[in-house]
Each structure stands twice: as C-alpha cells, then as structure tokens.
Picture 1 (cartoon, rainbow, N blue to C red):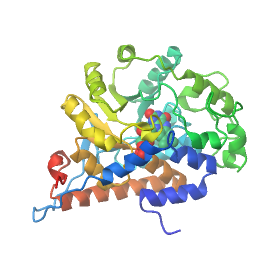
Picture 2 (picture 1 turned 30 degrees about the vertical axis):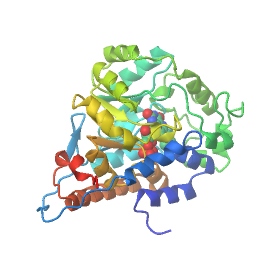
Picture 3 (picture 1 turned 45 degrees about the vertical axis):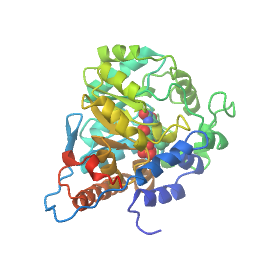
Length: 381
Ligand code: FNR
C-alpha cells in the first residue's frame, strides 16, 4: 500500500494490521450504524464558499481551547482501550499530539494511566470521565487527574448504558444481556498473538488510572465485567454539582445534541460542551452532529466553548465545523487508526496533514484567522 496520508489511508492500513475484533471495535457504531454513516456524510453536505484576491499570505490556524494555546482548533478525543491498538498507545498518541501542538484527551478506560501519559508527553492530558456507581473511585480518579497536572475534565454523559454494538457481539465481545454470557476478551487478544505484541501480556499492565482503584483489575475479563457493571444510568444534572464540588479545573460536558441540554450545561456551570453522539456508537437514529451544531452553538451563545465531534475526517471538515459555530473539534477514530497503522509518527503525520488542509482551506475561502471563520463561509446557494 502507498504511504498513508489521509484518515482514510490510515483506516485501510489499520484494518490490515489489527485483529478483526479490534478493527471492528474501533470502526463500529450502534445498531444499524445509521448515525455513524450520517455523521460523515453531513459534513460533506456543507459546501464552503471559495473567495479570491483577498491577500491570504498570513494564514494562521492557531487558537486556544479551554485556555490552552493550540496550533489548530482540534483535540484528540477520548478513545477507550487505545493502548490495545499499539504498545503504550495512549502515551504514543499523547506525544504526537504534543508535537503537533494540540491537546490529548485520556479516556477513563485507557490502558496507560494519567501519570504515564503526562510523563511521556511532557504535558498533562485532558481527562475524560465516565460517572461510575462507585463514587469513591470517581473521586480518587479526579484526585489522580489533578495530581498528574490535568486541568480540563471532559465529563461524558451520553453513555448511561453502552449502546448495542452488533459488530462487537458478532466478534464475541458480549455486552451484558446482549451477547454471549462468557466474556472472552483474553482469548480474543491471545489468538492472533496481539496481547504480546502490544505488551499487555505477562507483567502487570494496569488498565490505567482506573485499574489502580479496582481490585483484580489485572484480569482482563474481570475488569471488563466490573466496568460494564459500573456505568451509572441514574446520573442527573444534580450530579454535576457533586462533580463541580470536587473539580477545580475546567469542566466540559460531552455528548449533547439538544439545545435544551446545552442550556442546562451552561446553567450547571460548564466551561465547554461537546456536541457529540459518541461517534454514532450510542443512540442509533440520532442526528448527525454537523446538522445539530448550529442550534446548540446558538443556545450556548458564547457562554461556554462549543466543541463538536463525529465524522470529521480532514482539515476541510474542521473548517466546516468552525463555520457552523464550533470553537474547535475533537477527532476520535482518525487518530486511533493512525496509531494502529504507524504509532506516534503516524499520528503526528496525520495531524500535520489536517493542519495544512485547514490552512489551505482558510486561504482558498479568503480568511486568515481562525476567529474570523463563520457562517459567511458556508454556501447557502
Ligand atoms: C470512543 N469514544 C469515547 N468517548 C468517551 O468519552 N470515552 C471513551 O472512552 C470513548 N471511547 C471510544 C472508543 C472508540 C473505539 C471510539 C471510536 C470512540 C467517542 C469519542 O470520544 C468521540 O466522541 C468519537 O469517536 C467521535 O467520532 P469520530 O471522530 O470517531 O467519528
């Protein structure tokens, strides 16, 4: 295969390298995967206005997200179990993000812990939190994140229970009540020798900061069962107060698609929101994020930072997101594909490609500063 350049190239290479069940875990969505498909298609539906003769010598993609300077308006989205895609995967991706000048978000269910990722990258990641039934573990994770230097917490609210991911069930990764009773993660990993290849065999491997607080976490299957049972579907807006009382940093609420929820997030004191349907992995049939973004941005009305994710596959899509009202974007699968295809160097190369695409798109649309990108850059016919 030719040298991978785009997210699609890395996707193709990742599918060749990864064991089938991991490639499917990464690519898959919920249900019939309608929302997954809609996410990507929606961005392409917004045409960008080409403008000329506007002196675009000094194009600058730099901005800030949650008070942090970034070389472009993008952060790496939390992707659970990314350390199964490559050896010390989250640490590799965080280093690549640092080199590209953008933030990395570490999932609650990362393989590498907060300390390892912060030390590897030389900068603390944003930390993504799922609310767990065991609030003592949540409180301990918040302390870990703060101690590691993380100052932005991304609280994901669109997973009160895991969506039905049929690809995972077909591949033997059972969900509670929705698939094979016996969890066979260990056997699946062992079959193609992958567990040794990514360094999860033999020595204690942890399961990140979460694993450190869970007794018996070294057993893959037991840990997965514990995590599956920990998702708390009783969480409400009142729990944001609980969180606020324990987290002094920035708070971002991830997984909103409705303007009423965006309004509630602002009222609850969120510093930012992520317009997201979890990359089509939760409510199948939910709208594409690109089509919901303008309404949520209008509801927030500048009172918090609006980020968006789902189906963004290039710097051109980043431009579209900003034109539709986002301050920045998160990208999930693209960096995970690159990590699987070529590790840290591939993630860094892909981020470089996106930044150049964004810069050229800005130039061809006649805008030199990120802050000036707006609805005027979308073709309304
Ligand atoms: C995710 N996502 C996710 N989100 C989160 O808050 N915590 C997590 O642990 C995970 N884990 C995860 C694993 C995998 C394999 C995927 C693909 C996604 C959702 C992620 O943060 C983001 O919302 C989507 O991935 C965005 O869509 P794209 O960029 O993948 O299309």
